[in-house]
Structure formats: C-alpha cells, structure tokens
Length: 498
Image (tube, rainbow, N blue to C red; front, side, top):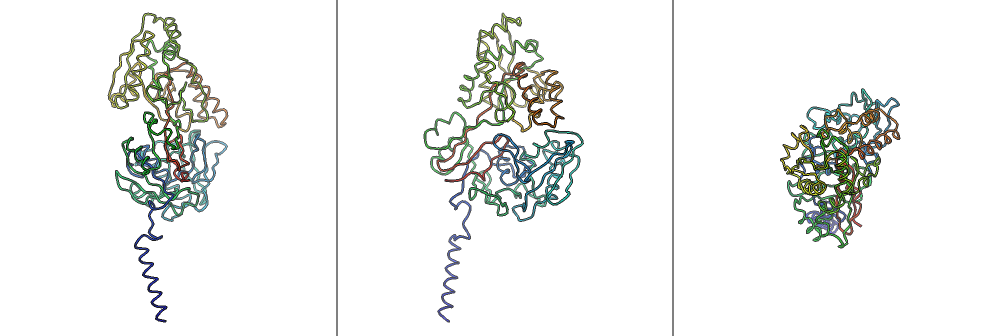
C-alpha cells in the first residue's frame, strides 16, 4: 500500500514538473510547429472593425470576426457566417441563413438576434460606417438562424455591402472590442504587445477547417528589415514593393504578384477649355507610353488598364491597348483640335505620394514631346483634397482610387451630377446606364451596362488610365496558401506549412 501511495505521489510530482516546464497544457501558440509568422508594416489602431478606417487593421480583424458573406480572389460572393442568402422578388429585402452552431470565441452562441444587435451597432452614430448602411430600413429575425434586412428602395449594391470587413459581426456584450475582440472567426486574440506583435490563437468554437495552429503578426515598418527577417527564418510571409523584388527572386521563395482592387490614373479636368475637347484628351493618351511609365515608376509591377475598372472584378473588359503610344498621332489630333502651336496645362501632384509625383513628372516629359507644356505643381495632401478633389480647381493630376465590390460604387464618379465627379465629365449615355444599373435585378443586364460604360470611358478618356497596381507577397519556401483579395482582407486560415 505504501509503495502504491509513493508511486502515485511521484507520478503527481512528475506531472507538476512537466506542467511547470511547459508540458502539453502550457504550450503557447508560438511554440507550435504549424504557426505562421507574418511581418506587417504598422500596428493596428484597435481591433473593433466598426471604429477603424485603416486597411491594415481590417486585414487582421477579418480573421477574428466574420462577415455574413465574403469574397473569393475574383470578387465573387461566398458564404461566411451565413451559409446562404436570398433576395426577394421585388428586390427590397435580403435574407441570410446562418450556419449551424456558430459561436463567438467566448463560447456564446451567435444567432440571428446577436447578428441584429451587431448591425444596430454598425448603424449607430458612433460607427464610422453608419451612413453606408442607411439603406437598411428594418431588420427582422423570424427564427434563430434567419435574419432579414429590408430596404425602402431597390439597391443592387446592397448585397456586397455585407462582405466588407467593417460589416463584421461582433459580440455587442463585450464593452472593449478595440482591445478585447470577440468574434466568430477562425482566430481569437491571444496576446498583443503594441508596436511589436500580435498573436492569434485558434478559436475553439469556430467549427470549420483551419490549416495552421495560429498566426503571429510582427510589426516591421522597414521593408529591408522584413527581407532580412525572411532570410533568417524569423518570419514566413512579407509584402514588398517592386523595387525590392530583385532581392527575393531566384531564392526559392513563393512569390505572389497579384493585381489589387484599385487603379491609378491621371485625371483631366473636362471643364478646362482645351481638355473639354475629346481630341485633346485622346492626344494625351496617345502621347504617353504606359508600359514604359509602369516600368519606370512601379518597376513593371502594374496591370495596364484602359478604363476606370480594376482587372480583378468579373465585369472587367480589357481595353488596355486602346491607345498604343503614337506621338505622331497625338500631334495630329492636337493640330486638328487647333493646338498645332502648343498648349499649356498645370499638373497638381500630391506631395505625400511620391509614386504619383514620379509618375506625373514622367508624363509631363512625354507630353512636352508633342507640344504640351506642363507646369508641375507639387502640393500638400490637404490642398489636393480641398482644391483638386473637392474644389475641382486643376487641369491634370495623378492619383489612385481604391476599388469596391460593386461596379456602381466605382463608376458613380462619372455621373454628371455626382459629388465625386472631380473629372467634370458629362455623358448622358453614362448617366442613363448608371440609372438603369441601380434598379436592374438581372445580373447579366447589369454586367452589360457596366461593360458598356467601360467602353465609353475608354473612348472619351476623361482620364489617362494607367494601371491596376500589383501587390507582391513573398512567403518561405515551405509556406503556401497566401492569397490576395479585392477588398482589404486576408484569410489566414488557408495558409499552411508544408
């Protein structure tokens, strides 16, 4: 009996010793084998998706929380927290059907009432995105797994609004989501050392496949330091710019160069007397070698475009070669328009964005070759916003635009009476097509309208459409599954070590 007692005591002491030294019960996320480490340039400004506008923050929160629906790499809508959805015949309501056994990372169930409370919070004045969801007139929860959003008027862009990361479903009973996020996503926050790193552990209540054991995000503002850390095996995934691509090529890394959902262009003020003539705008397009421009400014990492539409969206029409560089043709068009003896224009460039300043200088040099003298004016960002974008007091400017999932949100900038139409562009045909799109329930017809608008813009060229910028992700040779999406999200759950 004494031997048995001593044996049990010894076993107990050994188990305590193992536990204290980091036995199975105390293994941290970072000690596990299949944990992926990624370098990020900035620390998030909090982890409450409704109280941030930072893309870098959404890339993290999209893994802690879930939206009702999400997107694939091409922008197609997919199930997420909701297994399926339906739109009423009159187009005035959208119903989502939640997946079984959905729960927050604290174990609390997430049913239709919890989703409703989250959206009430999203639509409150405290939310940064409340105006984006003013189209919702009523929210109904007919049963625990069904939530219905009603609208007073048809809004074909409404469905995609539920996929953006700021529409994530949160546990509204948690009072400090900024520092203690509580969602239904594949991960939960394990630890966060500001300006240093975040550790994401698996959400035990997620209930769906995750291909790794956790994710560590290390804050590294310096891109060169990121490459050094990758080479040393300290991080597994980094995001770099084109000028550093040569530093990682031919070294066995997995490199993903993917066009983002955005575009860069040189806008022209169509109210300017010369620029109101389509022949002058076309001459400018013929004068610029876009391939050489992309190579010179972005090291060749850009997808050339010919209209105001990113290549990643399914409605995209390839019009990139509509204007091959032809300076003789540019001069002929300028002569036809009455500017044989030259033309002077002012170009305002935002000081805060060096790539746009560089692009503007290259374009100005090319325009000079065909007789267009450009006075380059480098301005502060605040001036650009107030005088160029809002005040429309400019001739030419180079800038970028972020993409959206629904084409209307992209192209409404060209609505004649639109507040965002800083091009001062006017086309009755484009106005009519945008109006028809807003109320058209047939997807094929909507696609037809959008593709027609792209072709009109390519012909009228209210801007010099340059490129859809390419992002370059680099991962260790044994790390796979990282992908780029047309909105500001990452899907860490699909990344794994082979």
